[in-house]
Image 1 (cartoon, rainbow over the protein chains, first blue to last red):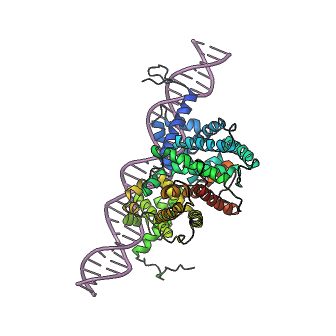
Image 2 (tube, helix red, strand yellow; image 1 turned 180 degrees about the vertical axis):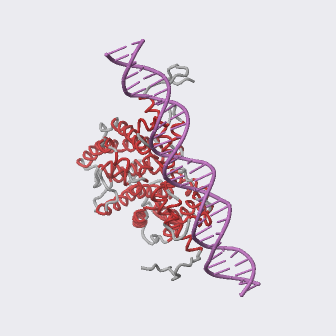
Length: 221
Length: 221
DNA sequence: TAGCTAACGTACTAGTTCGTACATTAGTAA
DNA sequence: TTACTAATGTACGAACTAGTACGTTAGCTA
């Protein structure tokens, strides 16, 4: 039952700044995602940590900065995943479809991240604005989309007039909504958007949609 | 400067249950949309009303029930708008495009509603679940989509294998995301999804996408 | 091994916030 | 006009919550 990172030290306290900080961030991520910024309780975060509330203020300064730190780490994880995108060896259509699938999978696998982003939007993205880190990260995914799009458009395969940012918005909106709005959508329309049994259907649907849009016959325009 | 519903009565109090209730709901909608459920302050709502906090508890029972009432009214307004949809005289392609445009416009025109729905999702749609009203409203839009889809599929114009609920999700996700996530998206990618100058572009983009998806050549499948 | 400091814990406070007990009055019906 | 009740206002309290003052100790370094 003993966790990996548990040096056997009967009742003396252990000093490990990095571990303490990481643990606070872990718990804070859960708590903020669970209850929203204002709903989250600093005391609750502290209680679920091996350390005390004092340490939250010691390392992060306050609730506001803690939430910013949580966001920073969450976005960093996402960006790292994006850096491992490896689809450019495929032809443009296959590459886009693969990218869509990976985006879809990634959203599904990180519901906490989606909740944090929803929460941050309720607050007008003020924490992102306050963070130096987050402005500069950029988005590897955007670069990938950009290059695929260029190849596809040059070859005439892609007829749609979109750039990478707009296409990214299109893909993300569907993936995001499916997770973020599943509760109200389920309650109102009686359909669980995250039902594993319908997963493949929705995954293909998005791919079909994006490909259909990009490659549609526009000769009549 | 005197508002329409202001009977001239110097300093005696006016008794009008309906008006008081409506005014509380108006202000509460703004306050909840502004700050989220936990961020909203009952005292703040009361202060911005011509009545007092006492009346909130008198009419609604508590903060929780007030939020539920706010949601109920917001959804009622949406459903009423949906009942005025008049697109079925058009051919299926034009009807869908028109429906998409109306959905797009409606989301843009009601950012407060979108915030409320985001907030309700953070809380797992528990207030919708607690409301008897909201379960039974149904969705006129869904019926409209359903009929258009049937016509289009029978005629062979629509080749996609979707039902009304899934198509509704597809259309909504884009319209919703554009408003709900505009802050984080803008902060991270430097593009304002609600920029009036790009409005037409996004509006057409969604129409093109949905039509392309529904009518795509699937002979190769 | 002495001493220093980063890391940590305890206990408390000031301010906030939902909710309510109690008092009052406008409008209505008899 | 009287009496009654729905509607309203005032004042307050109990519980919560972010943040802090102050004291302690682990572990490193000279």
